[in-house]
Image 1 (cartoon, one colour):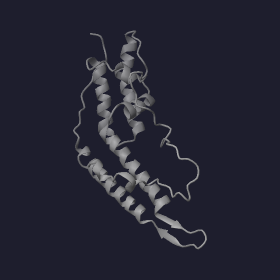
Image 2 (spheres, helix red, strand yellow):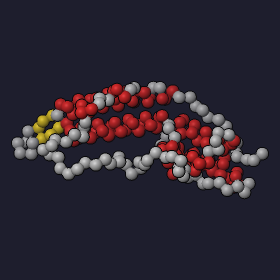
Image 3 (tube, helix red, strand yellow):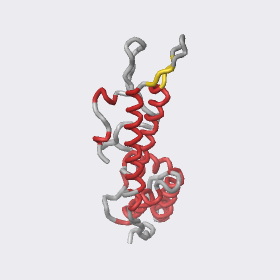
Image 4 (cartoon, helix red, strand yellow):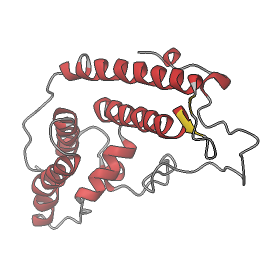
Length: 200
């Protein structure tokens, strides 16, 4: 799998408009409202802020949350994974610390979704997202570019360049699927036992 699978330049410009039919001005837009800029130093995510730098029980819980994400991605829904992670954090970090009188931030399934989608790279989830994205572009090319009909004569034409683009996208998607089902599905489980957080 390589980026060379996708052609560069005008050859792959699936959004190029015919000058005679272009109206208005095209501006970049997001594919969904969920997209945001990369997180940085000002990130308010509790899992980013309170991962304890790689030592102690809180770190083991965070590692277990990561392991859950990698083990279950592609097998159960993301919503189920994020709920399990939030439950794990509550049971092994939040509740034990509260019993000891220590203030601890709450981590919800929504926090887990944000953290594990945007602040942590899960190769399986990323590859699944890439496959869906290529599929969306392919669908756009098929619906908008391949076939056109003259509104007066009724004559139907096939755009050969768009057909080539669709086939290139299809090959690229199949390469991604092959990698997803092959190498990525062979990842080993990193599950570890965890103990409730405590100051001992």
